[in-house]
Picture 1 (cartoon, rainbow, N blue to C red):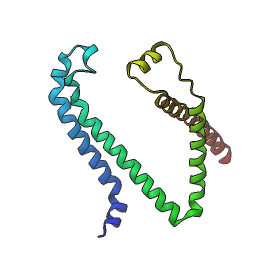
Picture 2: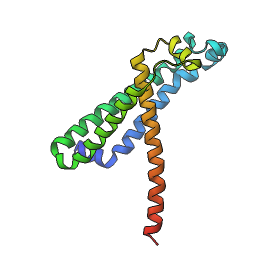
Picture 3: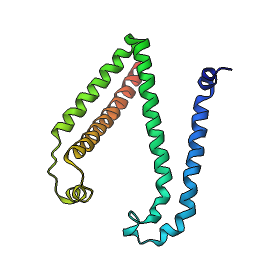
Picture 4: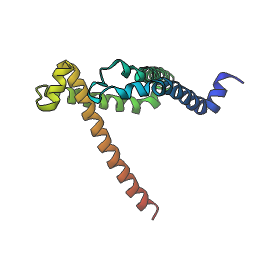
Length: 163
């Protein structure tokens, strides 16, 4: 059996099992160092050396994120070059999302006060990084509102369509 046939048949199961194994591996240092971590006062836990028990899980998550992005970009490019006509809607959608992000990025006010301003100063977040984070959050919220609205509209449409 070729690798393609195997992955097309069992790829989801293999991916799930890999993630479960990685999750268990990430839990090992957490459970091993949990008692030492709990002995550190709560206000110092974020900066204590005992907090490194979570590092492996963070690195695994980061690795999976990078792998996901790389595979998504690669397969998207393959789809674009093998079937450009079918990829037109996806490219238009990506362009709209990119334009919205740029608009939100440009509209971000970097002069913030209160607890948010304190956090920005404490962690020395630059204006450009703050704008990227703010633009991403605003875009995510817009997409969430759009998703909820679309789900409601589609349910109403489906109800009347089946009547």
